[in-house]
Image 1 (cartoon, helix red, strand yellow):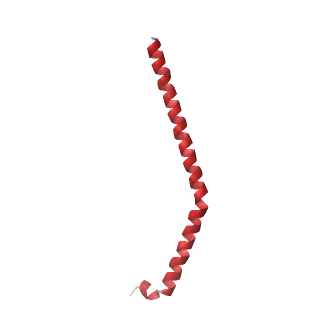
Image 2 (cartoon, one colour):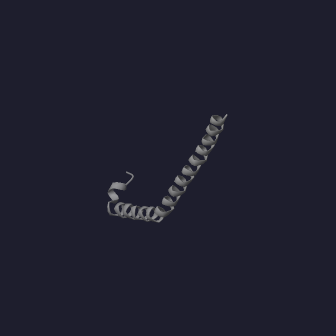
Image 3 (cartoon, one colour):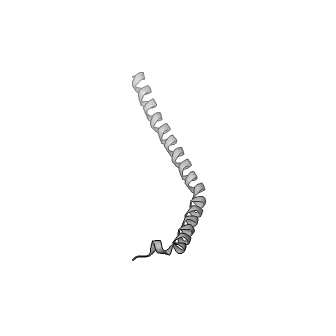
Length: 65
């Protein structure tokens, strides 16, 4: 009976531990995404500007004919 109770307790604590580890991992992932968001937006704007400048300078490449 003691072995059964010990097994159940360890089983339950294992799931609680895994839940905590997954929760911490997801929270850190979200924090990293939030921290990198301004940089990603800045890169997107820079890429858009560079693409627009390239298209204006090389209009013959973007001509639909």
